[in-house]
Amino acid sequence: MGTPRGRMIAGLMILPAALVFLAFFVLPLVRLVVAGGDGPDGWAGYGVALADTRHLTSLAETLVLSIAVTLATLVLGGIPGLFLARNRFPGRALLVSILTLPLAFPGVVVGFMVILLAGRQGLIGQVSQLMGGDRIVFAYSMAGLFLGYVYFSIPRVVLTVMASAEKLDPLLEEAARSLGASPWRVFLDVILPGLKPALIASGAVSFATSMGAFGTAFTLATRIDVLPMVIYTEFTLGVNLAAAAGLSLLLGAVTWAALALARQATGAGVAAAG
Amino acid sequence: MQKRSLGFWLQLALTLAVSAFLGVPILQSMLAGVTRNIFQGVLKSGLTLDWVGQVLTLYWPAILLSIEIAIGCLIVTLLVGVPAAYGLARAPGRLARLAEEALVLPVAVPGLALALAMVIAYNPWGGFRQSAWFILAGHVLFTLPFMVRAVLAVMASSDLATLEEGAASLGAGFFRRFFDVVLPNCRSGILAGALTVVTLSIGEFNLTWLLHTPLTKTLPVGLADAYASLRLEIGSAYTLVFFVLIVPLLVALQLMGRPRRMKPVPEDQP
Image (cartoon, rainbow over all chains, first blue to last red):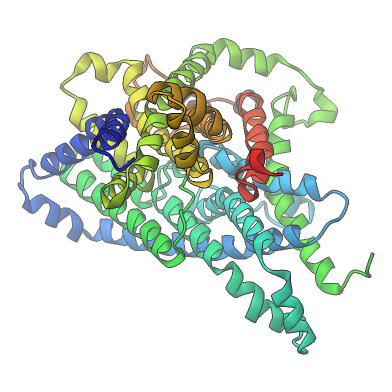
């Protein structure tokens, strides 16, 4: 299909999608950049917004939260994913379904799950009270958000690691074992390197999702100052377009870069964030 | 069967713990949605469908709008995304890869930022901005990459060029080839893409929260509303309604998605 006619057909087929992309992505993004520079401070408004201590603190907190979520999720999703891919036992299919079910839950629903676990009437509080302690409630804080993002990210890590573990060459492992490697060494030297692309890819998605997610924080509390919440309040309450636009662009750049770097590192398509 | 090692049991324990972490709140919310009074507990107060009924009366327009937008979104992504995937698969060279990268960008950027840009750009267009079409536009922007990717993945793994050449040598024109050769061979990708699009559209909140108006509330917008202002039982009942809509889609997606990934072209297996 290298013929001019073939190329023209291919172009025509892409055209509608390109128009959607231009009208609802490129044009709005350009308008956003311009609107941000249109405030009382002009283009300097971006500098003012990005130098604001509250914004910088929020950026740092969001980064720390997202990195913590990513690491926790890789452990809490990676081990079950590997385990379920390598073992067959009764009830396995049920566990796989439970672990992958929340894959497409919206952030608001995940927030509600956190409230049910760690909220004022939450399970954790009830259990802690029954055991004679205080009612533990942490849903409406950074810890609650951490719990929510881990909840949200586990299914993707489980799925990606399972798919990757099933493709590992069992011969490599056997070879390592026959050469006298301990199970732990086999894990470190054979399995983990084999899973690396899957871990990088799903870790990047966890990170990007945690950076940009809004629904969970919105459900839990408006007092959690993660970056998307700050953008939202700057836009709706502060009517500070320069800040909202600047932080949005910054946030978009960070999440895009994380996903792009992961794709470079793995050479594979990164399953996109929900 | 070999004897299970200590490692097996430790990993099983962790897997069970993580499954409980994910599964218990789902069960809790489903149970709370049909419990008369959650503070007294299920056993004391008994079961009821009253809360579900209240949710349906309060939020029926939002639920309906979400279903309508999801269907609209599916139609548009099919009409726009499947041809785009074909174009990308057939167009050679760096320009096509670049176009592919660009089309996937909207997923890499947080929904809130996308929505903010859309609201600012289309604010002067009052009629469009206020309508449900505006939400549809946002959902199409966000879900289109998933359709394109799902279809493109299948196209890349099946030898489309040879099939099409064969058909062309037999005298089939472009439309004949597209509808009789290309589309049937991409069935699984189209189906996977369609399920993903509908699932994501029904649950979409990050974009929709800024795009919606009081007259165009969707299901998840109503959920946020219910969580914030109504009693726990109603929030739970509403979540239950959402699960009833979304879980069959997710299960279907898992059932068809998993084996296909390892055997991209099952039709060709001898």
